[in-house]
Structures are given as structure tokens and as C-alpha cells.
Image: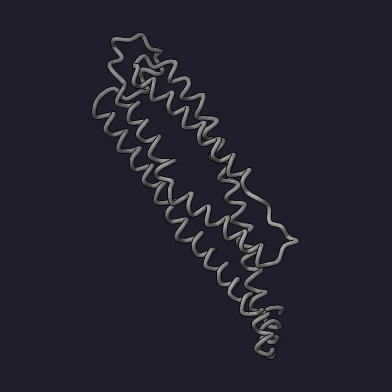
Length: 212
């Protein structure tokens, strides 16, 4: 019933009133989409920080337990990368300024557009700061594992690490596929979600300019 009434109002409105009606609808749709994106970004940041916090003690155990110098160094460098991720995501959280609802609609939209552009830059560069460092370090760790027969290891760790060349190659390929999927998913999010949202913001800004 409400939808039909809105259609009737739209049909009987003047051209100027229709523009105002369309603009209001665009702004409401955009506002809902922005709220959803902001929630998703906050969940992602918390998830990444949580994963890094869990990863630190796991790789600390590897650094303590592995007797191979290269593998141990790779584990320690992985801990450094986890710390880097925690600092990076925390800085991004602090860098975000809340929307000033006392500002004009145009200023609010410009602020939201700037935030989305920052996310585009972040995800477009994910290969260099998120994927490549741990992938190379894990290759280093896997390749650095030697013959367990010459060392006195804890039985659990002995049975868990790749020793044979075929096991190492399989694990490296599997990690490569996993990290490639991460890059693809982030690129897809930019193409399917963030850039269309920026275009929608530009559309509303254009409508506001023409209204003035």
C-alpha cells in the first residue's frame, strides 16, 4: 500500500518535486549502504587484529621449538609481521573521523567518499603489505626445515612439519593458492562494492550540485 502511494505521489509531482523525491531516495539508499559497509569494515579490522594476536604465540612456539636457524628466523619475522598488522589496523581505526552530522550533506558525502577511497587504496595494495610478506616468510620457514632425525624434537611437532621435498612443495603451492584467493577476493570487493559506492556518492553529489 505504501509503495503504491509513493508511486502515485511521484507521478503527480512536478519535475522539481520529482528531483527532490529521487534525491531523498538516493540519499536514504546510500546511507543504508554506507552503514552496512562501515559495519563490515569494523568487523574486518577486529577479525584481522584477533587473527594476528592468535598468530603471535603460535609462531613464538615455532621459533622456540624449531632447531633450524633459517626456519626459526622466519618464525620470528612472521611475529614481526603480525605486530605490523595490529599496529596498521589500529592506526586505521584511530585515523577514522566520525561523520560530522552538523556539517552540510555535501561535506558529509565528501567525508564518506574519502573514507571509501582510502579503503580502495588499502585493498588494491593488499598484495604488497598483507599477502607477499607472510607468503615469502612461510616459504622460508618451510624450506628451512631439515631432517628431524638429527634433532631431539617433541613428537607432536615432528609429525606436524613438512620434511620431504614433496610435502614442502605441496604446502607451498597450497599456500600460494590460498594467498592468491585473498588477493582476488579483495580486488573483487573493490570492483563490486567500493567503486560502485563511490560512483553512487558522486551521483548524489552531482544531484545536490544541480539542485543548488
